[in-house]
Image (cartoon, rainbow, N blue to C red):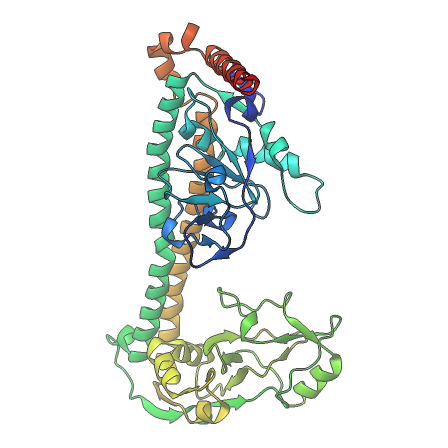
Length: 450
C-alpha cells in the first residue's frame, strides 16, 4: 500500500491472510455447446459478465465441483489482461473458470464487496505493475498475488465503504455513459450540416443563384493514381503509399504507419499527376468515400483503392466539392451505384459521370464558411467532452483512493467509535480470522488422523 497513516482502527495485511488458498482454473478449450459454462479472461474484462454469452467447456472436468464457481468467489486474470478481477454473484449451477484465472475467496467476517473495490484501485494496480516489472511476458502468479498488501477497515466500515462506493461510482458511470453518447450525436450533427449544405438549406435566406447540374468531369480532373493495379512490394526505407485505410477518424492521413514502397514506384506513379493545393482523395473500393485533403510539399504516392480528385479552381471550390461528396445523400447514391459483388466499388468512369447541382462560386464560398463554422463548434464540444471523459476516469480512481484512505467514512467513524475499536477493530477481525483458520486446520488434521 502507498505511504500514509491509516485511519483509527485500520491495519494492513496480505491478500493471503483474508482469502482462502488461491486456486488455478481448469484447462480446456471453449465450445459454443455443452453443459458446463467456462469463464475466461475475455469474459471478465468488460466489467459485468453476461453469462448467456459465456461459452461452455469443450471437455468438462471429471469433478466439476473442484472448479465450480460460487458466490463470493473473486477471480483474477494472471495473463493477457493481467490483473482484471471479477466478483462472482449468483453463477449458473454448473460454471467453472479457466486456467488463466486464479480464484480467491474472501474468508468469513470479511466483505467481498470491499475487496472487489480494492482490486479496482490504483494502489492495487501499482502493486501489480511492480510484480510484473522486468517480465518479457506480462503475467502474475498466485504466489505473487497472495503478497498484495491490502488496507483493512473494521467490518462495519468495510460495508459502509462498499455501499458508498456503489452509490458514487454508479453516478460516475452514469455521467460517463452520457458523455460517451455525445460523439455519436455530434457525428449525426455533422452529417445533418452536410445535408443542409448541399441541399441549399444553409443559405436559403440568401438570394440563391441558379444551380447548374454538371457531371464531375466538367469541374474536376479525376485520376486513377495507380498506373497498375498490382500492389507494389514493401520497401521499409521507401516512400509512404497512402490508401483509404490510412485516413484517421479526424480526417487526416497517418503517414507513420502507412505501407512504404520504393522510390521507383513513386516516380512511376507521379508521372501521372502533380498534386496541387486543394486536391483530395476518395475511397473507391471496399470503404467508399472518406474524402480527405492531400497535403503537399513532401513525397508520398497513392494506392489503387482511392481516386484522386483535382478541382478546377475557376469552376468549383475544392472544399465545397469535398463536402458535397461527403454528404449523406451523395454517399447514399454512390453506394447504390457501386458494384456490390465481393466488395463495393465505385470506379473512375462512374465518378466522372456523377452529377452535381452546383451553385455559384460566391454561394459555394458562403456554404463552406458556414459548414466550417458549425464543424468548428462541434469540434469544440467534442474536445470538451473528451476532457470531461478524462476527468471522469480520473474521478473514479480519486474516489477509490479516498475510500481506502478512510476519507469517505471519516464522519461515520467519528459517529460510531464503538464499531471501529476493541473487538470491532480491524486488528481484532484479523485475529478472529486467524483463530478460525487454526481451528479449521485442527479439524482437518483430526479427520485425517481418524
